[in-house]
Image 1 (tube, one colour):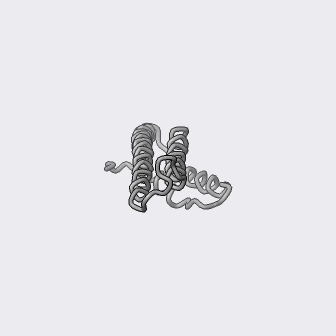
Image 2 (tube, helix red, strand yellow):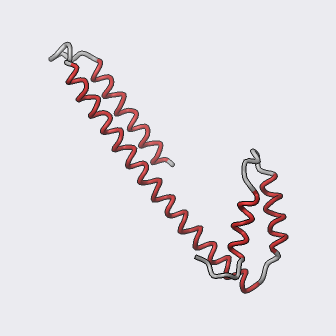
Image 3 (cartoon, rainbow, N blue to C red):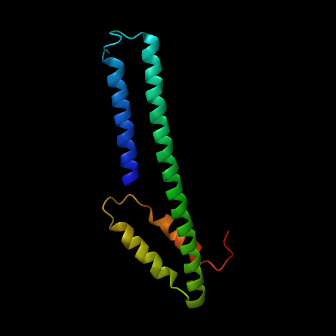
Length: 126
């Protein structure tokens, strides 16, 4: 998260600096032509897009890492359940209770129950 905020701050600073440059008259040339302003604005936008691309790449890598961890955890749990058994009704009750106590109640308990059922299913997993 620190990297994301730093990148965004850097992008904002770059854009602000470019905007200040494009609107402030210089000592060499008091008034810039519209073509020069367009070129400067495209350069600022290009830097911003590059910064956003780096941030997006980082977020994709973090998301992939989370997905790998979730898959590994699901498979480990499936093995543990296969060896030890599980009372799925009790799990479903606990899921519903936990979802009901969330601060915004935005979650759908049925989706979580479906995930739990897929983990404990004796059928081969994809």
